[in-house]
Image 1: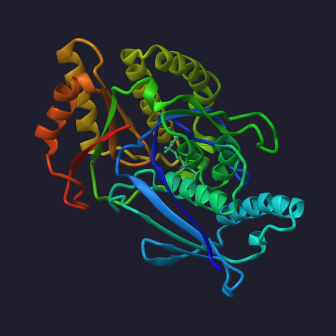
Image 2 (image 1 turned 120 degrees about the vertical axis):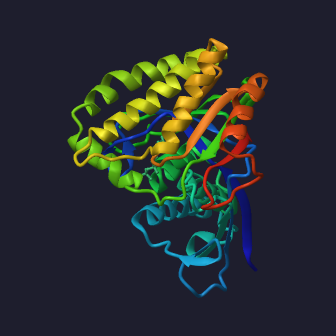
Image 3 (image 1 turned 30 degrees about the vertical axis):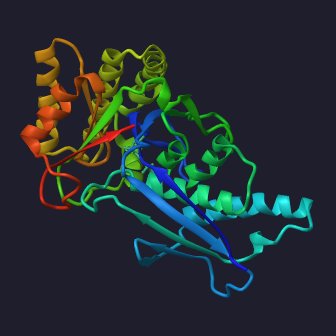
Amino acid sequence: RVYRASTTAPVNIAVIKYWGKRDAKLNLPTNSSLSVTLAQSDLKAHTTASCSQAFSDDDSLILNGEPSPLTTPRSQACLARLRALRKILEDRDNSLPKLSQWPLRIVSINNFPTAAGLASSAAGFAALIRAIANLYELPQSPTELSAIARQGSGSACRSLFGGYVAWDAGTAADGNDSVAVEVAPASHWPEMRALVVVASAEKKGVPSTAGMQQTAATSTLFPLRVEKLVPARMIAMKEAIAKKDFATFADLTMQDSNSFHAVCLDTVPPIFYMNETSRAAVRLVEAINERVGRNVAAYTFDAGPNAVVYYLAENEGQVAGVFKSLLGDKDGWAGDRGTQVQEAPI
Ligand code: DP6
C-alpha cells in the first residue's frame, strides 16, 4: 500500500527583512524578521508526499515535472529531522507502519512565473515539510515544524502560518528558539491587500543565500541594521499591526526595505537587486502617498527587482488602480513579457 498526503503552502513577503546568518549550517539568522503571508493569492506550492514499503528507489523529487535533487544538505537535514520525529511515534506504538524507513516520493508544482523569482523557496520548503509531517501524522505544532522548515530555507519557516508572522532570531546555539510565531491572523486586519509588480524577466543576480553571507562579512552598515534598526522596527511593527495603524506599517516597511537594499549596496562587491522599474515603483508609491496626503501604499523589495505593494482595500482605486493603469493591466502572469501587476489579497 502507498501512503500519501498532499498540501499547499503560500508565499510570504517580509516587511522586516531577514538578511544575514549567525550560523550557516543550522540556518540561524542574525536578526528577527516579520512577514505577511499572501494566503489568498495563487502564488502557492502544491506538494504531494508518498511512501511505501514497495518503493525500491531512493527518495525522489519531481519539481514542476522535472526530476530535481533531494540530496542537498538542506533537504537532507529536513528529511532526517522529519524521519526522526516519525521514528519516535513508531517506537512508541509498534502497530504503526514503519514509514520512517521507506523511500519518499515527493511531487511538487508551483505556479510562480519563472521571471518573478518570488519567494518560491519559502513556499516550496514550507509545503514539503507540511506534506511529510501530514504523511507521518506528526503531532508537532506549526512553530515546531518551522524550526525544520527554517533549515530548508530561512524564509520558509514563516510560510507555515497565515497572516502576520514573526521569525524570532533566537539566541540558543542549537537554534531551538529560532522559530516562527503568529503575530496576528489575517482576519485581524482583513482590509490588507498586496499588489505584486513583476518588474523584470531578468534572472536573479546574486542568490540570497550567498548575498547575505557577503553582506554580513563586508558591510560596515550591517551591524547598525542588525543591532539597532531591526530590533526597534520589530517592536514598532508589532505595535502597528496590533493597532492596525497602516501609516506606521507603511513607514516601517519602506524603511526596512530601503535599509536592506542599502546594506546590499554597501557589500563588497556591491549587490544591486532593484532596477529602473523597481525605482519607478518606488516613485509611484511616493507620488500616490503625497497626493493623498498620508501613507496609503507601502513598497517592499526582496532579493530581486519585483515590488510588492501593500495597501488597504479602501484605497484600491488610488493604489492598485494607478499601478495597473500605468504599468499594465493584464490578467495573470506573462512570464518575460515585461511589467506585470497582480493583486493578491492576503
Ligand atoms: C530578501 O530565505 O531565501 O527574501 O535561508 O539562505 O534560503 P536562505 O535565504 P532565503 O532569504 C530570503 C531573504 C529575503 C528577506 C526575507 O524573506 O525575509
